[in-house]
Length: 216
Image 1 (cartoon, rainbow, N blue to C red):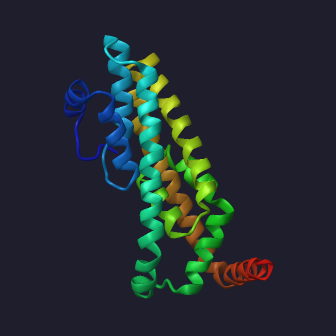
Image 2 (image 1 turned 60 degrees about the vertical axis):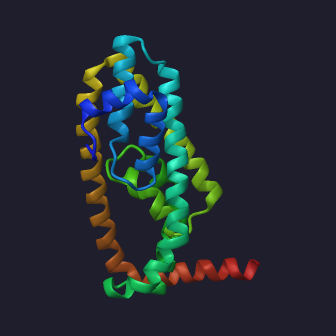
């Protein structure tokens, strides 16, 4: 996802602000603002490989830190405001308390995979943390999967850009969109499954939360 900044601007920003630019662009994208975090990481890695003016270790550290910090901001925004917004306006799109409970149940089961792999998929980098917060995903589990995904992502694309240069940049964009297409197909399939089995899944979710309540 190209976001709001083009590649020439990224190089200019990097030469002016250095590692802080990587940190803040990645952090803002992770918090929900459509900025080119991945493009910035790859561009900085290529720049470091070609010029030697930046440390690839510091680039990856800045990107990983930005991903972790930004995702946690997005998570708490979703946690504080997402549920209230869905409770207030969800009925207009067919989402009521049972559907909210079901969303929380499904995120409890597969939320870790969504948070981890969402870091590698265009658009989900922006939305995964917000969705995790809105669906009340466990904060400690979120931190673990978020940090793991952020570190792996920064290593893969940072080292890829540094070692393979512009070739990884040509691959990164298409891979992100392929991942997005796969994610969209998966969402459609899940939506179909949801609609067919919604009542059963809601009963499973309610039973699950009732068991939790009884243990308290």
